[in-house]
Length: 277
Image 1 (cartoon, one colour):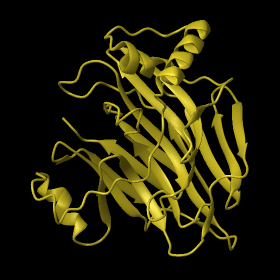
Image 2 (image 1 turned 60 degrees about the horizontal axis):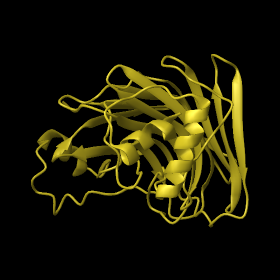
Image 3 (image 1 turned 180 degrees about the horizontal axis):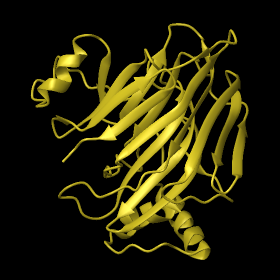
Image 4 (image 1 turned 90 degrees about the horizontal axis):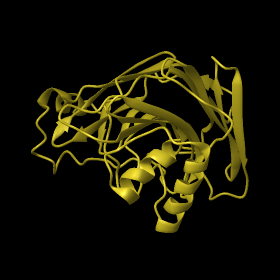
């Protein structure tokens, strides 16, 4: 559903938006493929604050001096990171928010909520799965996807969502080159999954709970996603230990020289709020 809506922006450049039929979705996917445009999450794009002297959110920057907050152009959320292979499973549950166009923004805007392994300190491979949120005026849509970066994302089929649904997203690495992505909609009871094998090797350094401004031929217009609050947020280590994000590094997004997100963590929670105007 999401891939279809993004096509209208990238290929047709039209302001019109409607929930497409199955036939229309197929036609638009084919057109997107032929145009070479694909939806993809990317590794964390870090903002170097020593060079970005024009960032105007002084309060946000103050936290960075303590080493607990990082800044990015595409990720907001929390990450646990080690310097050796550590994490094999990441999971979290959230209630789907109703995205809005940002203040002054018109047309299609997007955000993606996901969990993943790697992409922060180790960025040549990422195992991840999540939900894309799309908005155009009063029209909203949601689609589930799985991805093993550097390959592009693929839509899950046979599962639907609406705002207010409770969703659990999980990735599990069975090895450095294989694993599984799973999404469950608790309202409908539907679960979908995809098993990977023979992929580029993970480092297993990073475990993440993220809202992203993803890429489709360039970063998409970023939505006011409201708030994504992961509960039951845990990661399992190769040693069999279950850990939470309480002491994770926090990541905030900078757009137009302003920090537009606010992140907080608990023993088993990650809250990511949109604060942009």
